[in-house]
Image (cartoon, rainbow, N blue to C red; front, side, top):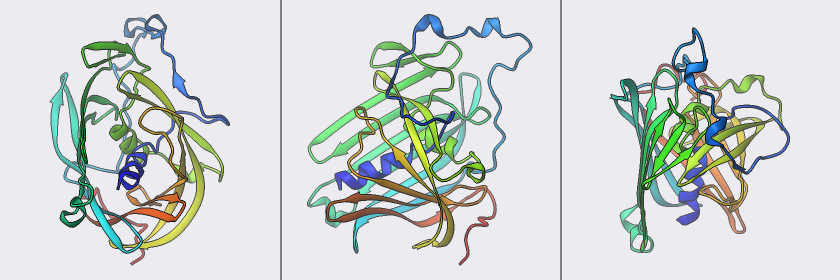
Length: 281
C-alpha cells in the first residue's frame, strides 16, 4: 500500500514550465533574485490562464490495488470556490484511504488540500495530513505569491514566481497542450515542499487506448522522472495515462515493481467541465 499511495502522489506532478534534456534537482532561490512587482509597469498583478479542463463540482474516484486486489480508494474533488488574499480560489481536496479489509493489514488515511487561484492556477495555501500505519505527519504552507515567499512551520523561504504544491501542480498540468509534444520530450515544474523548492521533469511517451472501470479512453502517456530526495523519490518506473482531450482527466497510474505493477485506475467521475471526447465507450 505504501507504494500504491506513493504512486498516486506522483500523479500530481505532471506539469512543465519549460523544456530541456536534464532533470534539475533542488532549486536554489535567492531572496534578492526575485523581481519585485513594483518594477513591472502596465501589467496585470498575476498571470491569467484560460482553461476548460476542470471546474468546481468535479469529483474523480480511483481504485488502488495490485492485480485483482483493491487495497484502497483515492478521491480528487473540487467542492467549492472560496476567497483567499482577495482572490477567488478552487478548493481542491485529495484523499487516499485503505479499504476496511486492507486496513487490518496497513491502514492509510491521508488528506491533502490546496487553494488554487482560479485565474492564474497557482496555490495560495496547502495542507497535508498523513496517517499511514503508525506513521503520521501534518504540514501546512502559505504561499505569498506577491512577494514570492513560502511560509511553513514557522519559517519563511524564497520561492520562484508561481511555484506549485503537489496538488496544484497536477491541476495545472491538465491545462497543458500535449498535442504539440514529441515522444521523448521533457517538461519541467518547480514544486515547494517542507523547506525546499524541487524541480521535476515529465517525459511525454505517446498515445494509447485503455479500458478501466470508468470506461474506455484514448489517452496521452507521460512518465515522471523524479529527482532524488523530497516527497517524489522514485521507487520504480511510473507511467500515467490522461484523457487525450481538453479535460486531461487522469485515467490510470501504474508503478512498475519487481513482482509486476501497482495500479490506480479511474472508477467513476462526476461534475466534469463538459464532454469527455476521449471516451470511446
